[in-house]
Length: 112
Image (cartoon, rainbow, N blue to C red):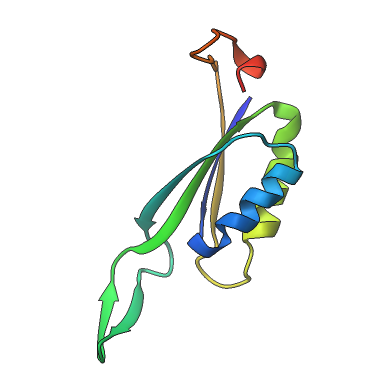
């Protein structure tokens, strides 16, 4: 099993969700986060005054999938979240040792 963590632009969330559903992903966890990468924040204008924010709003999407589904899920996220501009985000893939469904006690692939 793989844990896929994607940091994406907030307005791309619905497209990513739809793409993952089409790729066979049945569930996800979404969190609103703030951070920066190479862009080092952003400059905005509020009530005529320009100011710089150190952290940019992003969305963190986490999914756990079977090994056979992981490649398709990664491709789906990359295609749906891509705008071609700086700050599109990152995808991280980690191995999952075990998953347990709390309600039934099912393990691993059966739990996801």
